[in-house]
Length: 249
Image (cartoon, rainbow, N blue to C red; front, side, top):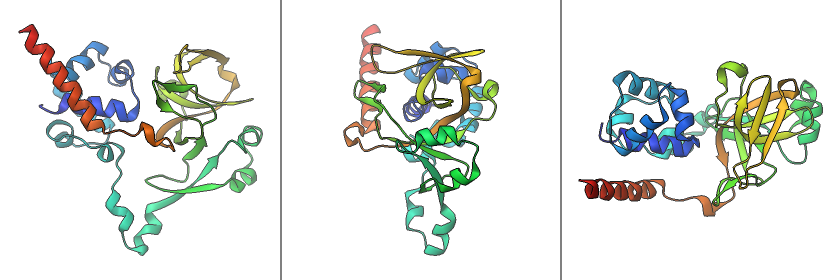
């Protein structure tokens, strides 16, 4: 499993999952995730299969290959240059909730006529029931990384809160009086969310205040400064870990 640890670290980075959030997805200990990533232990085959299935990857992709970002998000650039006859089936329009129409969206969330009047974005690898949200603040930025103001979040709706929500994951919360993009800290009859910026800001609201919750599938950003070669960063981390392990020996 030479690339398994590297790959799950890269998956977490792309999907913006902490080690704890990743562990919760597969009912394993947070420490185990760290051990896999550092090559100190290997996961059980059942766990490997479950991870591959969850992220729609083959075992070969997860174990043997070094995953690319495009493979993780299932984006095939070659399809962009397909024949025009195929392009119409490949691209799909989804509705955009931007800073200008957000308040009206909250008020008219069940009005089909209003929803049909919303501006649309045409993107690959989406379906019509997905939605795009323009982020309104800088509260989810930490150490010059994260979700910036005016970033466009490509989202899929969560239908069953109790089954589909996970702690420490960032969601789009459509409440009765505002739209929040925050990390879920706790969830019972009350939801507690927090920012990623420091010092952290905590916000709590009753579940009855929630109209919709959307999970973030992808982010379109203008902040080119945050784009960096992930493979290079991971290689540097691996080299530092290797040196530490050699010192311990």
